[in-house]
Amino acid sequence: MKVRQVSHAIGAEITEIDLSCPLSDAQWKDIYAAWLKHIVLIFPGQMLTPEQLIAFAGRFGPLDDHREDPVSRLDGYPEIFLIGNHMVNGKLSKTRDTGRLWHSDHSYTTRPTLISMLYCRSLPPTGGTTAFSNMYMAYDTLSDTMKGMLDKLEGVHELLHLGSRSTTLYRTRSFKDPASIAERYPPVAHPLVRVHPETGKKALYVSEGPVSRIAGLTDDEGRGLLQFLFKHAATLEFTYRHTYSEDDLVFWDNRACQHIALADYVQNSKTPRVMQRLTVLGEESGRFFDADAARVSVPAAGAQFR
Ligand SMILES: [Fe+2]
Image 1: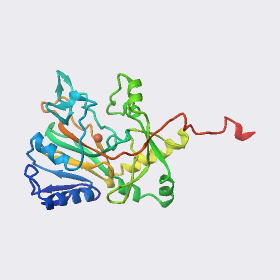
Image 2: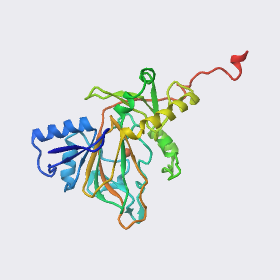
Image 3: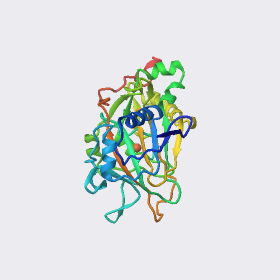
Image 4: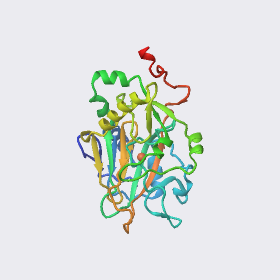
């Protein structure tokens, strides 16, 4: 197989390999090593049945059955979830605006995704891109003083926070029943810096979409630091933006990068953007965060002047 880096920071295109055929141990080892090194792998022109797709993704670990959203699953294949602006039962799919802010998948749970895999089935005439950013680089380029501070802190990730955001380009989904979301997905604290269990390298783990605050800091302190980190993590030199072709298979290591699905296409084209998505479950990580118990104590207003 041939490996070609697609940007300075992240991503490699892999050609001269057919994933529909059984892989030799040597091929599997090469793919795995390329994935750890380049974080995002792109396999253009793959012709895969759902069974072959599931078999390939399943080599990396157990797959999610997407039981949280059964309507969006591919019929007969719970491991395959359809993301796009296609029609589902006569209505635009509710997955159409998935991932419109920088994030690492399912960081708002205590079992964040290891690998997310997208198999491109259909595209609008232009756009529908995904950008990726290298979180090793984001960490490595910080000052030692900042690294020392971040090493000790945790970010609080909340699905409800993610669902309440809006930008100038779009509004994220709003939840019909926020109380039930809050109960099913309570806030989770993860270290701002995670040590990758396989490469041993440190990666920044904080993203604009779900992170609402920094544990132990006041809202004012945390907000300023988070604004810096969100901007820093998306530094263009750390990124690669992938323009898909049909039959591209793309997957990435959520422990080492963030990604964003850009709203850079018309929603009403004849051909929608449709991806078959597979999710390899990650390891347990983080802890449930009790906001009340963790309330930061600050002096009462004016107390410091007495
Ligand atoms: Fe995502």
